[in-house]
Every structure is written in structure tokens, then in C-alpha cells.
Image (tube, rainbow, N blue to C red; front, side, top):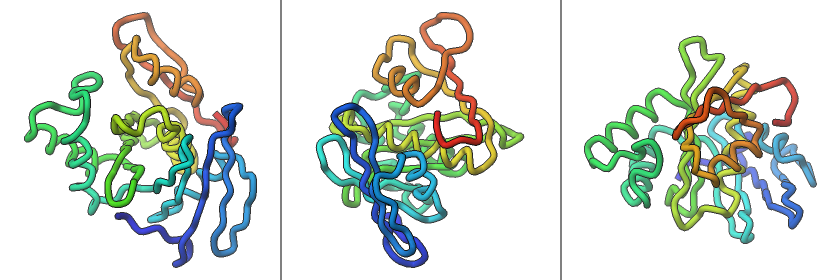
Length: 214
């Protein structure tokens, strides 16, 4: 499992979803005492290098969330090997085991990766692939079947958006199947908007400002 350190000591951050759908974060760690923190500000602390936090999903169950380092490659591949359905969207993750392994290697090598962990198992994985200018990036996210609709995708995406903002990126984009309503609803909630015409697959973009809100 990836290390969780804040100035050499553990950082604990409990994100939870309120009945009204709002996000509350309570964080504690060395030099950090921030109760009832806005989630995106929590995401800012979350995305420090080699740092992860403990979060609570909608069911109140803990999981770890943070950067996914190259040495987590086998854990990421294990998640995708067991993914259901496969492929889930746009041919991803690839059905062929060799192709799937190469795809994971390519993502880990070229993208900023983030993961949600339960114990030693990766249960959610996201990647941000910058373009040649490093000002824009393609975003993708997958959550294991038993962990969907529990808020993991929301928290991972919030953290990635804040990471991109800190890196000076100005726009994120993704492609989504038009009738994948769960994914579309998540992206719209995060501030992504459709661009282009109506087809079976559509592009969504997010303009990143300097403020901590989508």
C-alpha cells in the first residue's frame, strides 16, 4: 500500500457525504487542524507528494485515497483484471490480458495516477494525462463494481481537479458514452460540460480557474 505521510507523520482526513449531498471533511495531522473543511480545500492538502488520506464513503466505511505510485502497478492491474463489466466504456479496460497489462503500464508511465484503497486492494483508479503543453489533460476514472455509488468517484475526482489546478492546468477533458448516466451525472456535478454535437460518445470539458470550486 502507498505510504501516507504528512511531514513524516500520518495525515488523517475523514470525508463524508451529508444527507443533503454536501461534502464535509475533518482533517488532522502535524500542524493541521481543520474541522468542517470544504472538500476541495481538503483535496488541496490531500494531493501533497507521496501523501494519502483516510476517507469515509457514503456508508461510513473507511478507504485510503491519494497518489498512485509506480510501485502500485500490480495492485492497479489486479483491480482491472477483476473489473466488471469488461470493457466498461469505450473498450476500456481492455479484455485481452496482455493488452490490458500494456494499457496499465502506459497509464502509469505517462499519467498522474490516483487510487482509492481498501486495505491493500485498489478499488478505484483515476489518471490525468497531460497534453504536450501540460496545460490541458485527459481524465479517466474507474471504480470497482462493489464500490460504486458510495462517493469514491466524487472524492477522487475532486482531488484530481485540485491537483490539476495546483499544476497550473487550465482545462480537463474526457469522453463519455452518452447514456452512461451515472458517469455523466458525476462529471456534471464536478463542473464538466458537454461540447460538440450529440453522438453515442461525447466530449466533456472542465475549465479550471484559480478558485477551489468547480
